[in-house]
Each structure stands twice: as C-alpha cells, then as structure tokens.
Image (cartoon, rainbow, N blue to C red; front, top):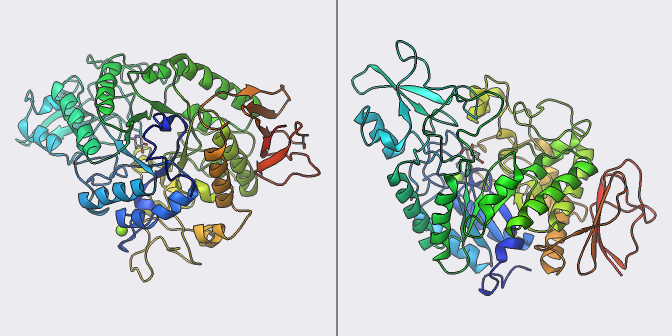
Length: 549
Ligand code: NOJ
Ligand code: MG
C-alpha cells in the first residue's frame, strides 16, 4: 500500500496540495445492513479497497440526519449522523479506521441552507413574522395586492421560483421564504451573527472528532445582497453568488482550521464564471482549494483543454494555491457518457443532453485518457466513486424511481442526477452485486443494470485492461513520482489536436485528441498508457506517461 506514512509524516504540511481525494456518496457506496441504502458499516468494510486504490483522503458527502429530499444536502442536524447511515460512534470509528490506514477524512458542510425539518426552521415557522426565529432565514411578504407573488424573481437552481409561501400558525396565507435549491432547503441568513457563530461551532465539533477538512457546499452562495433585488434573468447570479462579504466568513473559518494540529483544510465547491475572482478565495488566509469545474465541463478538444489548464494554473499561481482537478462528482453526468456523446460536446446542466446517443467504447477510451491527464496535472485530484470502475450514466431509470428533486422541479426537462448515483457494483454476477450483503431482502435504492456484472470491483481487479487497474497504476505512480502532484508544467510544442507537457524531473504526458496516431517524444520508458501504443505511435483518444531521457 503506497499511502501509509502520509499521516504519520506530520511534517508533510502541504499534503493537500498534491492529494488524491476520493469522494464517497454514502448511500450509493456500500450497504452494510441490507436495507438497500449505503451506510457507514458498508464504508468501513471497503476502507481497505480505498487504501489499495492509492488515494490520500476520502471526502464524504453529507452524512448528517436528513429527510433526503436532496440526497442529504438538506441537513436537519449538523452535529449528528443520519440513522440510516449509522451513529456518531460509527462515524468516529470510520474516521479512526481511515486514519489507521493512512487516509485522511474530509466531510461535507452545507452552510447555505438546511432542511425544512431543521429545528431552527420549524421554530421560524411557529414563531411568526418579525420574530428573531425568522431572522435566521430569509422570510419576506409577497408582492401583489394579496401578497401572492414571490418577493423577487430569483430562480431556484433546481427549477421554478426560489421562493415558497408558507401558511402562518393561525392558518392564513403568510410570508415567503428563500430557497436557492428545493423548497425543502431554506437558505440561512448569513447577515445574522447567530448563523455565523453556529457554523463556527459546527466546524469545531467535527474538527474535535478528527476530521481533516471540510468540503464547503455552495461556497459562493452564503451571502446575499440584503436588498434582495430582482435580477436580469441572463444568468447573472451576482445578487446571491460571489458577494464580497464571503471573504470575511472564510477568513474566520481558516483561523479555526489553523488552530488545530495536522493541517486541516477547507475546500470550496463553487461554479464561478470568473476564474480570477474564484482564485481570490484561495488567498493564504482563506480557503485551501476549490474544485476546478471548467476542466470538468470542457469538451473533448485539445485546444480547449489547453486553454482551461493554462488559465487555471495562471489564476492559481497568482495567489499561490494549487489547482484541484475534477472529472466527476455526484452532480454531473459520468465522464464515460459525456465523452461518448457525438461531437466534442462538453457537459451542460439543463437537460444534460439526456437521451442523445452514446458511444460507450469511445467514451471509455477518452475517460481513460482524461484520467491520466488529470492525474498528471499540477495540484490535487478528486475522483468520484465509480469513476475508477469506468461506470457510465444510467439514463433509463424509470420515472417513478427517480429521486432527485430536479426531475420534478424542472417538470421532467432535466432528468436530474440519479443516473450517476446508482449503487456501486462490488462483486458477483447479479444485482445487488455485493452492494448489499448476500440475502438482503431490499433492492438497492436505484436499480443497477445487469451488464454491471463485468464492471464490479472484483471483476475489474482480475482484469489487467480494466479502468480499475488503470486508476490503481496511475495513482501509484502519481504518489511515487517526484514530478507529479504539486508543482509546474511546461508545454511541449503546439501540435494540432495533441496536448503534450513535461514535468520535472524527467516526466512527460501526451494526450492525443486528434483522429490520427501521433509519434512520441524521445523517451527512456513508457510508464503508463491509457490504451495500447501501435508501432510506437499514440492512437487517437489515448494518453501516455513517459520517463524522459
Ligand atoms: C451542491 C451539491 O453538490 C449538490 O448535490 C446539492 O444539490 C447542492 N449543492 C445544494 O446543496
Ligand atoms: Mg444500509
């Protein structure tokens, strides 16, 4: 196992600048108790698999008590564990066991909103207009003579209006509350000092329990323009995204993280249009890193990739922060499917190009090449569960089984994100493929396709040409090569359709996006390739790592 020692090396202050971090979406990862839903017992049974994969840390999507309207991003208690997943003691054991294997643990924090079942929201509903309880959220009277129009025109990011009207305790139609996501996810009012104090306390609660960092959900959205102005519906989200007031919040969070030993970190989820503004959150007294989504959405095109990589490295260098490369997560169409769509289409929300044909063999070749590219770029790396098995988007989930609120809120325009959340196949030849224990009576919470028998971790581990073996080999080299992880790259040449760069000492990566085989630079050894070389040439849709002379 290549990762042991990472934790004991307290001196490795900057572990996160190079870290390979694996995202566990608990309810789809592994089910220990046989109820068809992943849980912490399942996670604990697979920690050895994660350590063998060669990652440095695990990021857990929210594990808090939640009615699961939005897969746990609707939190009803920030200091507990969802009973379907386990107990607080299970979470502490998970952290301890991961640490013992040399794996760090990052957890999700969801500061923009909570569940409508959170005690503070329930108290706000009961307390009535003008009460301090309502001041923790954004309650406003409606517009129009009867107050039956929303207070402003902000759209929910899940479709429809960002406002929902409540019924007051006396039974009359009442105020409206703001929710940038589903109507079961009320937004907190970060102008309120109580909210700030509460989240600082929540950070400490989990740091005290040994977590190594937080992934901050909707990190760009906490602060709103308090005037709540109407916006131009042209995609300009500046009234509720990337507001200057956010920086103070993250400075205070960083002080808390830095007050703990062992280099605890804060990672932002933000989809911002302006990379240089995004980088401002990564100044040395703010957040440690932020996902790079421009890379994720980039179409399969050498020049476009080069542009994204250059701009990313430049923006990050300006603030001394490492980039964090991401190919997938629980919100986006899986890479095999994205790259297998016709043409060189990138990823788009809205309808996700759902239903357009997919060439899965092509998508897999490209996803393999993209993985080697992402693993060899300067900075950190995030891998979403199932990416290492080469899983694709499941697009034929029957309508009545879909659970993502996006599906209903967009009136069935956007199928939502269930297709990348289908429970993982671990072993065996039929569903539940080892996701649930043998003999479990309840099916996995989303149906698994029969052909996944060839894509279980067990089947792939025995197959040298599998995506799993490529990830294992790639992550191992990545951990051992001094040239990889944090640092710099130098571009080689400007060939049409080819991305080629070197990293010191003695490493090169070449990715062929063109339609014809290309020759390789002079090298001593092929370290790894995402597909076989043909007469020494690099075929289309293939990446190779070289040891240079
Ligand atoms: C981003 C999360 O990744 C997504 O799953 C969630 O629905 C939204 N934030 C709202 O919390
Ligand atoms: Mg379970």
